[in-house]
Amino acid sequence: MSRVGLVVVSHSAGLAAGVVEVAAQMAPDVVTVAAGGTADGEIGTDFDAVSAAVERASDGVGVVLLYDLGSARMVADMVAETLDDPDSAVVVDAPLVEGTVAAAVAAQGGASLAAVAAAASEAAGLTAGSDAEPAGIVGDVDVVGSMSLVADVPEEVAVMLTNEIGLHARPAALVARAMSGLDARVTVRLGAAKADGRSVLALIGLGARGGDEVRVSATGPQAAEALAAFQALAARNFTD
Amino acid sequence: MAASVAEHRVELIQLDRVIGDGDHGENLDRGFRAVVSALDQSVPDTPAAVLKLVATTLISKVGGAAGPLYGTAFLRASTAVNDAAELGPAEVTEALRAALGGVVARGKAEVGDKTMVDALTPAVAAAAGDTVAEVLAAAADAAQAGADSTVPLVARKGRASYLGERSAGHLDPGARSTTLVLRAFAAAAGES
Image (cartoon, rainbow over all chains, first blue to last red; front, side, top):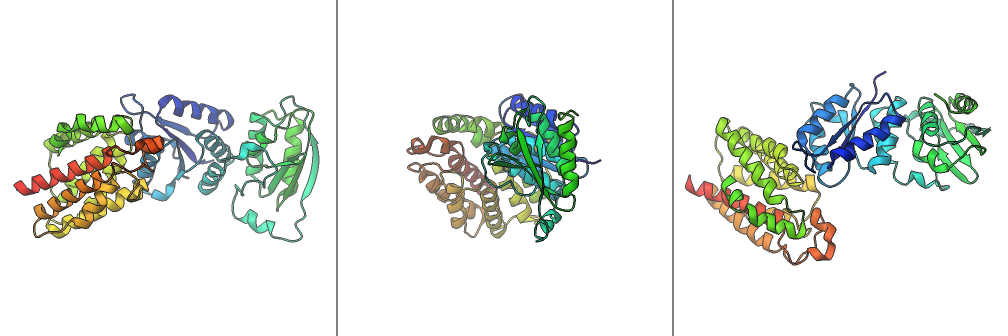
């Protein structure tokens, strides 16, 4: 499967590499390339290095670029504009770490370029875990269509988390990945808090631990499959 | 132009050290040196190609925001002059206008933000004359006045904006270097 690739543009080589390391743990099959620092190892951003990184990250279905601050955005924009197909790259305004992780998980699940970019840009504030509305839809537009059907009553199941860490980083990434591949809108609730089942950061933000019972609801054509997938993951304690 | 930047390298570094991170002079000097050595190797056939070579060299060699900003300016200027074999007053005016458009699009700065836009905007407005030299001299004079007007401003864009109120009372390094570049253009046009 071709996946959207990611490029982390930072003023610091160490920072870029660290962000890539975190993302790779949650999305092992996504090509995430670090482009940090200048050619002579100084703090700054390097147009040529970012161009090369975009080339390496590209698998034919697009690349999302994330940046740390100031001129990193300008360099990322310029690189995107000078591509043979400027539409094949998207520069996203997102918190670097959260945005990269959210984009990586979406890309791992096979999401489109637009969906991966949306996952990144919606990452801001998702870790708060409040009862805010679930983040916008990370999947394709047809999910929105299914939401408007009056008869589309959400199905809901209660799931006991029996693994020790509950919906922490890796389990959350597994859930988000599984849900991203289905045509369903999934909401996971813990008490009054709720999270979009496709958002790894929102899921982590719930703070659901082992021994907690979460309620999972889904709407859309594949709602039943989504709930079954969640139950199956929980039943095997979110192991790969 | 490279000589002017080199000559003013220390001044730019000092301006930038006060309200930026002190690398503007160093970076631009490195960039324009690279431009000179690229042009030493081969001079492209058309003005547009020369401007494009300057753009790509600056983008690659100048770190910080100045690389993308100057690079975009020269790139847009290159596109604006198209395939003209020689640049007259009209082409130069159009190139300056395109350069400003590029810098604004790239940096999202407006007049009053204490950036190079404060020099380039009045320069474009004033760029007029019967010869290329006149156009560029008028632009450089207006850029100078525009740069001077940045002194009391509080920076709203770029590295100096992190300083907030403390950026007031200092000349903006980007506006200053923009003036130097235009002045160098004007001097070159006056000689030819």
